[in-house]
Amino acid sequence: MKRTICLIGIVAATIILISLPGRAAKSVAVITGFTAIQVKGDCKIKTDKQPYKAIVKDATYGFGSTVKTGRNSSLTMQFSTGNTFRLLARTILKIDQDTKNPKLKKLRLKTGKLSLKLDDIPRDSKIQVETPTAVCGAVGTRFVVSFEDAEAGEAVGSRKNRFSCDKGEIRVANRFSIGQEVLEGNTFDVPEIQAGGDLVAVIHEGLENTYTDITVNRGKLTFNYGGKKGNTFSVEPAHGKPTRFVCSLEKSAKGVNLMAMKVEEGVVTSEKRKPRIFRTALIEKTEIKPVDGAIRVKAAQIASVEDKKKKEDVAADYIQAAKKEGELHSELMVMQQQPAGNQAALDAKEKEMRAAAKRATKIRKQLLARRTTKILQQLRRSSRSRSVPKRR
Image (tube, rainbow, N blue to C red):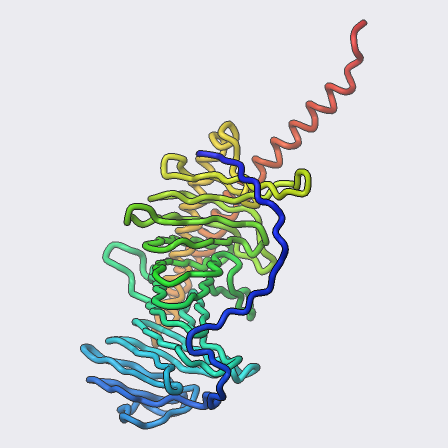
């Protein structure tokens, strides 16, 4: 791992007002529904209490509706002039309005591919796209979101989130639940994907641990983990080749500092802020490459070379154990959504998943305990050296 130290001077804070495309001060009507402007092939719509029926071109529909497209079909809907979203073939999407904030529209993508052009969104209004495992927010931009089925050889439920930004910028984060609470960003958070950026993420929630497989095809981005300020990595693919890394960490609503990571392709750079020296911020940068193997990361601090050798096997074991737990959790979620499921099979799968979660958590605690043990040993040695009387 290559380490470099960068000095960043203090810069006076300045507030800059940016005029986004299509965000002029003119008055725009409030979004109250959506209209079908292009209908190709088999396109249907329903509300929670009604069956599916064919979508009629130029007809306007209300929030709370679910739309779907069949094979070789596509559908373009419009919120208002300049603000459209297009469903490609075999897509299922529910269009909601947030109950607490009516200006927030939620497009819940259950499966398929969705393309959005938001060039003239009314002031203060927001459009958010949700998949079962991630969320994407944007205003005044153009981007594509897809949630694709598992490929051959992959575990059931290993579905890919893909986010491509064509104009403006978007923010992407994971979604997971603890009890009845739905949380965002505590395990996977990309604050900004700019135009030209393309990201694919397979996110497994797990019961006690999470596993994420991230591929950055284009664009430079910052990746935050654990829901803690300062846990920051940067990724920028070089020479047209993607950067891919996997990571596992505890599933927690409070946020965590400990993570196991392995870079599969490309380079990932950690950024650790050091104490100020003469009023100057000091940032230590560490490059992580495939040759480094599985590593332990604590508050964006990479273990030393000597310490890393002791932890590499444990970190690798934790990544694999969390992956197994996450895949079983995803499989169980898929089984529970099937009508009239086999209860015995569900019980067996849940038992297997809980056992996998217990094993992954045990390894994670070993990963944490190794560092704690080393610190205690250093303190004991220091204490003994002070207590030994000096020879005359």
